[in-house]
Image (cartoon, rainbow, N blue to C red; front, side, top):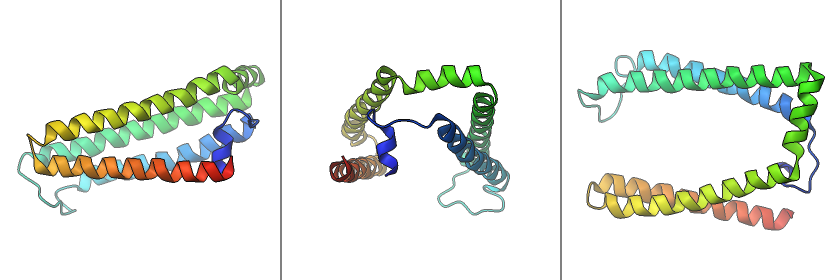
Length: 162
């Protein structure tokens, strides 16, 4: 199963991982280009619900910025992984770094601690947003519910596969 590839006891096929990153980055590159195209259409050609006058300046710039960010990140990832595949010494160095048990454990723990921090920050945001806006409060509650649901689903999947 795909999830098993993330854990320490499973070997990593570094070349396959690089190729997967290149394919995923190509998809993100297309998504970035679509987002940039949407920035030109937002507001004028695509109707936006609940758009106030000051949002007409913000939305196109927001989509343009996120689109270019995604585009450049995808290009950088593609270039980096193609270099790993073409230069054996660089590939070996990176493969050792990514397959090192300590680095893999640090990555897993970082994700876990980031998840705990996210739950805590969402909770604080929910408490504070009650004094600011009911819409923000409800939005944060939905985000928290989805986050906990995804956490629960992955826990159930991992219990069955590990």
